[in-house]
Image (cartoon, rainbow, N blue to C red; front, side, top):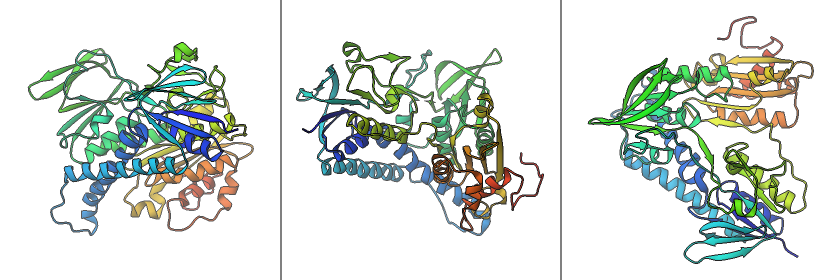
Length: 466
């Protein structure tokens, strides 16, 4: 007899889980209260990267004017860029709907509310109650807010609103120096906006390897982005010229003016108004508690992606969705939480997977580091990047790769090679033995592997890498 599976949420966790469950022979229903594709597809990953693609081209063309390229009257057509972004999003949303239909998944529009361990009420234009053998919660996340005076003023925006501004602002204050903040800083500064990042910690990108984060900050500074570190937001004031963020550093208050103030202070699990308390699902610090198979404390109910807050990344949600439904339907899934790449789409990009050097040290692991500066890589120089770096964290005795971190062109694509090597428990010797094409950025990974033992081919022995 077919198992009936209900997926709550149509984001990259939910719709992938729905497709996989259908492939395994289940009758699948998916409930989405807004747009299929979730935050990532509609107001997150995809539209942000669509804008960043054009920002990178704009930035590159301006740099290449001094390198033999002649361009007459380059300018930005903001409405056309907004339209292109929307076209890409709509095409992908329709693609998701088509995939669900092709796999026989039934879709329902409305707010999902758990009634018990086997019932979900869909509150919408036509409220219905669905029975299920298995329920998978994939309700995603929402932006976090800092409750300071003036936070609700006109012109104080979140990442969703930052994707649809009526024009490129002259100035922008970004509260938060994490992934969201640095990506938007890179985006708008490329189009001429004066950007200031306000971060309460001593450095930006706290979860990123320190050497990589330092290089990102240096590059953003070169792009005329200002930083206020160890700075706390106290208040937002409305002025005749826009807004002003009152920021406290070293015990003193400073005002930072901006046409807009972007709250980029992270995201939190979206778990309210779903009936979790009534059913008795355990939550902790605003997230749903799950085990290694993403099962909650209530049998037959699972929670994947941002709502369990283990790793708030779209691809992590997709992988968790596959693992959860495979386990729920009697299969043995494979999910490796230690090998989940993270990507930052600044210009140039940054990416990492596995342990950072600080994490390896904190865990008492004996390790070696391989470094290769991309100023010595031909393809990177062609791409106009001299500040890039590839870094490998390697187990001292076995040579197994424990982590990899990249700053440079196509870092978000290159990180996949390191992730695959780690999943296969490859050693640096095996990476070295793999012939990498020339000229490519990927050669830098092999050089970083060689540098673990001081044998990089294209970097002088003993030469310092800052």
